[in-house]
Image (cartoon, rainbow, N blue to C red; front, top):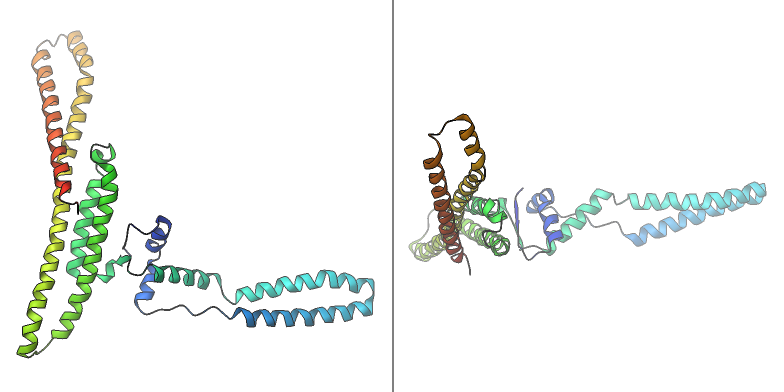
Length: 291
């Protein structure tokens, strides 16, 4: 299950939330883990049982002399360990882990959004935003540091979270609104409900504008990416020019030489200029994402 987490959540806790889709699903369906068995009652029971077993061993020791003493020294620690294991097994490992995850998720409630929390329209918008963000972060120009990769690493997760958070609120309120006005409504109710519906639409339009700004940024980055790759390829070819020239000279294919070499150099210069322009455009588009 896909989960978007507030970037302000510590990384280890954020990863736990992302990895806890199974528990999150159960929680959304109303699941609450059972409380742990009362430790005090279990402890008293264990003490009584160990004391009784110890008394039995001591009685046996009194009857059998040295062998009995050996039984006491060996038997009582074994009994204690066995009862401790039994005591702990009352609350199995999986239940303990689920309870810990549940408490952690409750602590961070409101700082993560599940895809299942969103209605269909909101899920599509979030998917568009995430696609644009992925295109930027995985681009070669970003990984090579040609973009402002530090600001990207902060701004883009913040944008994803803000979009997911707003869409979750919009989805919830829109669902409640539809339930309230489903079926026949009086003119008085309609007079109140219609402007509120427009407010919901206006809020969605504002989120759409955020997503479209991300998509414009991703499109500019894609243009820079194409120029970067082409420029890199041209530079590789230009770096091997002497090998081509050597081969042409040795083979006697003199018709090749000058025009193609000159065109290669011109293309390299043009691509470098195009790369600069597209990077400048990407930086300009990035400014629209700033709060």
